[in-house]
Image (tube, rainbow, N blue to C red; front, side):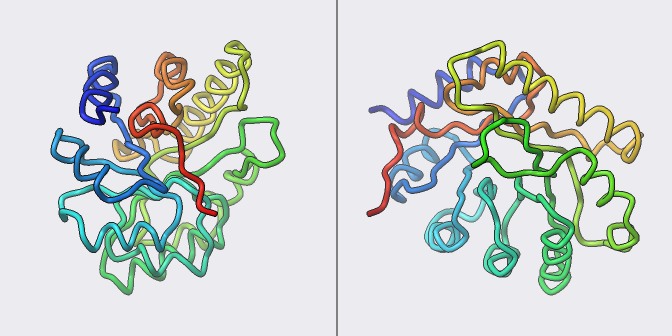
Amino acid sequence: MNIQENIKDIVTSLPDKVRLVAVSKTKPVEYIEEAYAGGQRVFGENRPQEMVAKYSVLPKDIEWHMIGQLQVKNVKYIAPFVSLIHSVDSLKLLQKIEREAIKNERIIACLLEFRIAEEETKSGMTEEEAVLLLDSEEYRKMSHVRIVGVMGIATNSNDNEKIRLEFRHLHDIFVRLRDKYFYGNNDFCELSMGMSGDYKLAVKEGSTLVRIGSSIFGERVYNK
């Protein structure tokens, strides 16, 4: 396995405006160091404590993205340094991020996560829930969170047409929210969709952030 070659192959296949989030969850620090030496700077984790441990020993110019479900109680661990939280799925979570951002004197960038797959295990909001959040007085008062786009995970399927339609649905949500709530706001520009098996489809449907792990680092290692 050549991590640097894998990254180079993926990056060269991406359009200029699409960024690679190297999904390093469950992977050892050495793998991230190899990717870093090859020029990769954006890494995605799904466990706050694991992200903190890696942050503490790795170069500080790494851009850390929280891509997994984030519990309210764990926001405090990553608030001092996280670059982007992909998985905001409730007003309650966003309020906690706001409070922790204030404590750390930071503005934290966030994506609203939408459930676009049919699988019960997938998390995320409906478009109606997102509208309620964005219309809420609580959100309007926030000054230390910045919503910069949306995120979603497609169904784990071999049906490319199904996946493509799910990505297109998320793109349509992105456009509607942008036009209604973020018109003229250039910060609202990120569409995080696509993983190792489906990122090429996601890019064709407008993705700006692809989250790729196994195609870079090999299959996921599950902790026993």
